[in-house]
Image 1 (cartoon, rainbow, N blue to C red):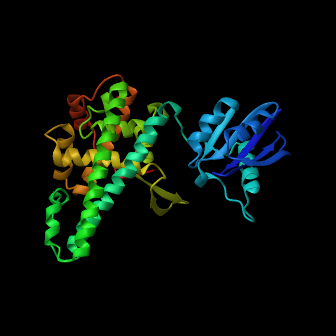
Image 2: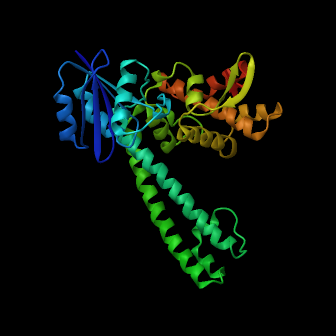
Image 3: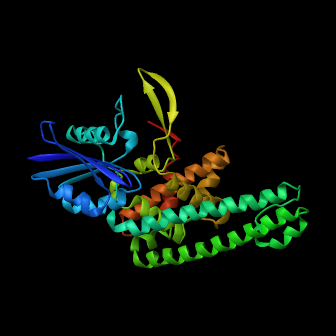
Length: 346
């Protein structure tokens, strides 16, 4: 007998609904969200077990806990589940998940247990960078509020400029902000040290680091998010996943506009950040010359830089699939044979 298990998991409680192959409910139970209670429900079922739950903050923990104890595990995207009208409770949600699993209407979200530690590190590093940006914005706003001219990044390294503020309260607030920024920057250095450990450990990360615009941090983040290059049949799928292209919405011959597929904005930031480094900071290479050629053809800076980002994404996929490092001469030859793909694809 095959059991179709729908799990609606929360930090305090988890609700199970179990259906048989004919859709009949054979169990529903709410337990505390602990390893002991959850495994007790799973172990009490006889026959094969297929289980589904939604992607959430507990997904990694539940995946590690449940995968060895069930025959099939699906972690689904809540945005892709058909909505059900009427009342909403944990029991109803769990039953709906079990029905969707039984009907084979669900597509699983990618999880790689071997990269869990790196993914956690990347996630918290991204949060840290956001905190640093917020503190820097607050520092500049203190000066702007009193019409004190500040430009560039030097103001973040010169707390002595607080003397230019006439308000004692603003000066005090500025001192606390500079202290916060110093603490956050020291934390950032610790994260970089951890990334360098993964850089030494994984050959793929070292190969990615040879791509123009990439460094240790971008290589680690790209590897953590992509995981396995075999997930993507072609570079076009990766472009969509990284939100680097828009898709036309066409029905009955009518164009209803364009939209981006839901993907990973953090991966988009990696590729666009690498493209910015290539365009503005790096020495001459094939990607820089590719950007210059697009500009000479009439493309504006934004579109040309995005085309470079797509090139970098395609190179990333190729480097992860093959055993070789980035080859600038090979890329130069390929640029001469191809043109950039429009930002809109079918």
